[in-house]
Length: 265
Ligand code: HEC
Image (cartoon, rainbow, N blue to C red; front, side, top):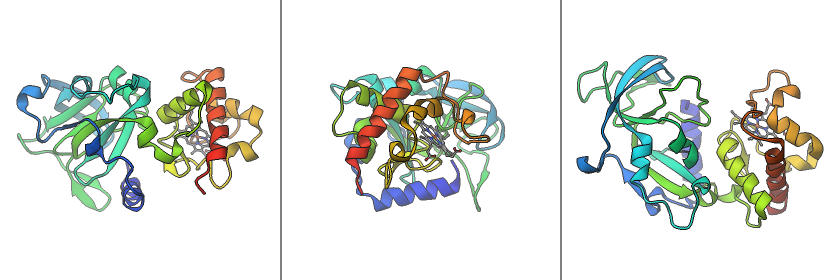
């Protein structure tokens, strides 16, 4: 998470009407939590912390244990939910609920290289900041940051329906394939790509003004989605061959084709 991305996300939050303020959804306020509600802390070692760019050690609560304490919005399945992490300045970032439950994430509350209540500082743009009060970390090596975010200065987390959180990128009309395509898209793609300008800005917008299926050969799209390097040398788009089957890539294309009929501009 670079400063520029944080500023951009903040601008997006300020400019767009907020469809779903975090407080409307079941949430866990880390600052106000009763100590009895918090899970048993663990010591967590990080080989390469992306914020400090060095090895670190923290005292931290297991993320999945905290998530178990948040009631899921009724009538929704695990693959229809996102976990939204909110920082003190209102910045928020999401990840798929199923990824958050399956991988070992930790919410750090103490930096073991600093005095209690203090954290080592790091440079963030022109500022010097710390990740306090809470910081999401992932001890396993090699996890992709676009799928497993490291938000700092966290204050709360909430569970929200992906359909609501991603607003304009969610299909209004959907059959099973389109629905499945949207689930996959919101799990694997939306951190980098927007649809109807809802989503990330690392990769190109895929629906407005032209939907990608209007200028890309449709039969080539599943292949591109699974392995962009086979099409463009040096692409920044990761490979999805081990995560997405050819059939699932077809579902994503069906979802993208549907959004062609649901352009917001
Ligand atoms: C880590 C960021 C990232 C993720 C995750 C990602 N992409 Fe991309 N994608 C990019 C970038 C950057 C480009 C454009 C430039 C390039 O080819 O390097 C791109 C290009 C594309 C294009 C071509 C668009 C065009 O007009 O050229 C499509 C289609 C696409 N991505 C679909 C997807 C889908 C579907 C997923 C999820 C399965 C996905 N991407 C996940 C970064 C990402």
